[in-house]
Amino acid sequence: MRKVLDRIRGWFVLALTVVLASLVVSACRGTEPTPTPAPSPTPAAAVQPSPTPQPTPTATPTPTPMPTPTPMAATPTMGHGMHGHGMGSAMPTVGNEFQAGMLVIRNVWARPATQADALSAVYMVIENTGDQPERLLHAHCDVAGTVELHETKMEGGVMKMQPVDGIDIPAKGTVELKPGGLHIMFIGLTRDLNPGDEIELELHFDKAGHVPVKAVVQKP
Image (tube, rainbow, N blue to C red; front, side, top):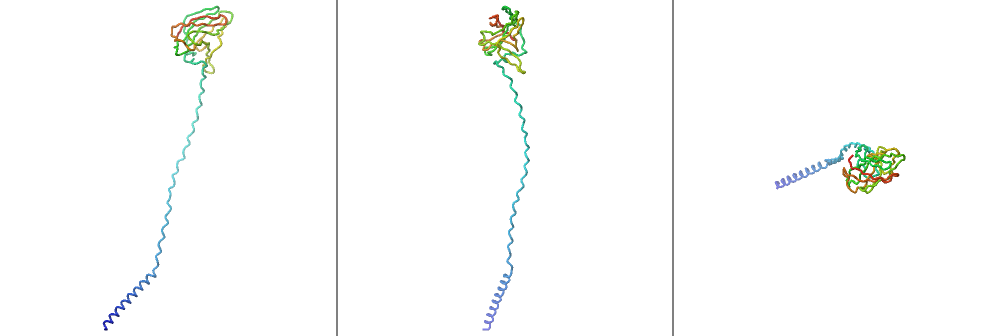
């Protein structure tokens, strides 16, 4: 019996020891400070890279507009420049001569041209041997639809050609119809004018009346 009691007492002491030890451990744990969680680091604001400064564009200078050239004055009569009525054209000598009253008409010639060209011109020398002035009023020729008296002259550095009402031949004077000056214009040719051809031309004067002549087609 005594052994039984001693064994019970030993168990009781052991159990009491375990309980006390548990209490001590619990008390120690209760006195430990609760660890304060470290504050979460505030995320740093993302640093935006500074924009690379763009170079200031250089202003392109506006080109100064060139002045518009003033166009050359147009000649009143179509296509004169095609037929070389310039001042530098030479006067050929064809050796023909016609006389009517006090008038002597010589060296009558015409420029070669094709019907497609549509234009040609006649030149001559008109001498008035009389004491009264004379005037060439107009001319007629079957090789052209229109025949006009024309004048070429320089105005402001520009060569201009235009019809004239008549050509005056002074008394005891001479007038030369030549390239770059007075001439008889053929407009609307009815056939080709080839070098060596002769064409009949009728001149109408104020006093002498109608005077027929022949023009030789000749290159200047």
